[in-house]
Length: 249
Image (cartoon, rainbow, N blue to C red; front, top):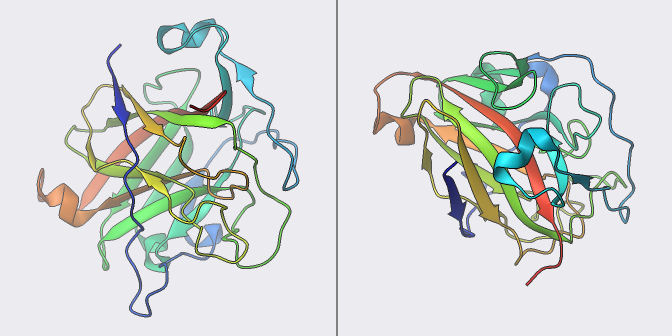
């Protein structure tokens, strides 16, 4: 299978008029459908998640001894690390329909994540997997992941029609007092998705990931999608989101 390896792109999400990150507030404000699952064991600040070995289902994209820490594997997987509760900006709550157990042609396992965005001002929307539900790092919390051994983020993505454009980031809350240890996130360029699943990689070797509260973020905007379609709605899918662990270069 063809994969795309992406270097680190420095940048932050759109800022509010006050100059602060335009974070959202609560998962209760937007529509989420999901399957009940066993929550991963809560880990304190200095506890590194236990990596899992790749299994036969993943053999096409990894060696059998690859150590992984999953953000999302399947909706009911106890290996998941992160709660997809943090929407941005605050207005994004009126745009986003998030399904955490979509069974429409998953790449692996029983389901994948689908995101449907119906653009409204300010015409961009994103969702973040947080170490603790609704947590942005504004207050102290021991709920964080030690990903200091992470070498790269791997994820699979596809568009519903093809041509949808997204951007993925790691550790976006470095400007918060109790946020990520990395002051600036790693980010992909804008990615134009096809209708078929494709594997993407994002290097994180240069980041300080000793404390991570936002291991995964995805964002889309009407401006980026207008290049491919004049539709006010986009839908795309994500599957098998994980960090590859090991000795950094």
